[in-house]
Length: 387
Image 1 (tube, helix red, strand yellow):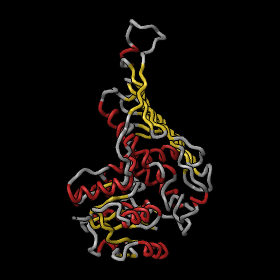
Image 2 (cartoon, one colour; image 1 turned 120 degrees about the vertical axis):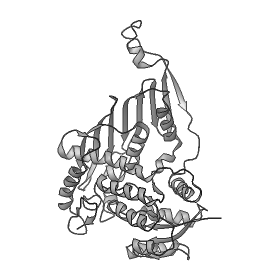
Image 3 (cartoon, helix red, strand yellow; image 1 turned 30 degrees about the vertical axis):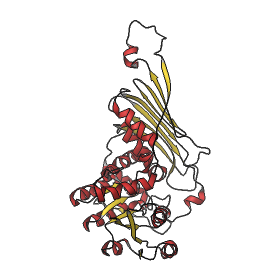
Image 4 (cartoon, one colour; image 1 turned 135 degrees about the vertical axis):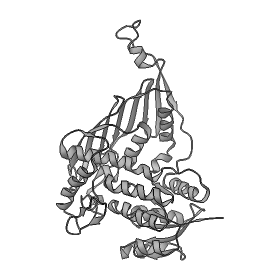
């Protein structure tokens, strides 16, 4: 059987998790050909559980130049994603990138352009798109049977993290090392699902609270107000300090309301279009259209990360669909960039946000960052990383 020869770059929490599952045979059509990790201790740990035939390298470039891999999975700190992806494209390697696509949209735009001109397969690790509940919401909202969206509310506060979590890596929770907090680390999946299901908003006003609940310099509590082109509005609330937290997504449309909570999808379906009912002169001022409550079945597997990797291999080997094309990664990043910029400037930001202005404001914070490995980093308008 034809197998995809895959290399994993970065053997931290996510990279090592992917490597272990592939090494255990969870995906027969994927061969773990090599891994790369700059930290010697992590490389030694990987050697203990990886098959003998898996090559180990101490740099991404060494892995890419080895000729052992047809594709790479990038699971490094956020700032490195675009630069490493571009190096892979230049070598004709297919790329699956962990979320987020990067830290600032200007850098990711260059990555997308290079991917398009390379002719290789490029995918994003948006594993929440494999969840049948979100797939059903996407189908119902975009199918048109419920009419236009009027309101979106997502409270996603079950990302609880302790101070130990933030202290676990020298790059975590710093502007220079990570480029953001809950928006960039935990919420790329939610922001991706929001735009995938509801479309991109046209304006954003956000309030990001830095180190409100933890000893960190980036945001751990966010409330954002969204405006859409058709007049719909939305509220997005997230935090890493609520315990117990909430994960509730409500979408109100002309024909009712969808509610997703606790992995269950509920539809309150109106018997008439609310917009038509509102202006019907034959109804009373306090009347409401009647509704029927449906528990929506969302059947199917939820393979998460393994499903995304399998779809990536399937695209390369057999031409089957990806879970999420790599070029789509810029959308959730534009949302988080807009929320950061809005909070920094204390004003509403039009979408897409000004990429140069965002980068300038990010650089101010990165230069003053208390990066745990030393001086703050500054990021070029050309997308390269410097110190």
